[in-house]
Image (tube, rainbow, N blue to C red):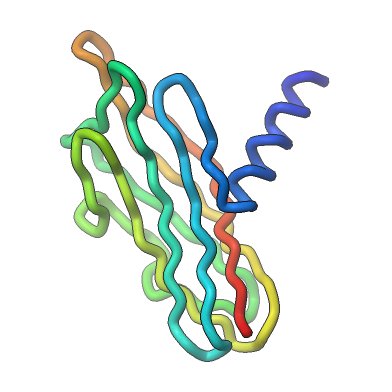
Length: 133
């Protein structure tokens, strides 16, 4: 029960665009907001914490699943599409909503953070809010 509540809290924080604080990295998701029919951008960012750094050699990727009425410029973003440094990994998502309203792009983020002695791959389920006016 405790684990289910924790997972629900993480999903709510990611959906709301807030930062998720783990002991290895923070995950932050911004909202894509624009007029309907116009391109909107959101960012999905991992910021390494403490002794951890982003693995510069890992094949980081963000795979997007857009809901009906939303198109994305690119459904699969790879490390070459991201801004990658030892401190941060950041993907920019470009989406267009056909009509006014709120939608959610579901995504899977794969990456890795490391210390001097270990590397830890991660997979995060991410919800990216899209608001069209």
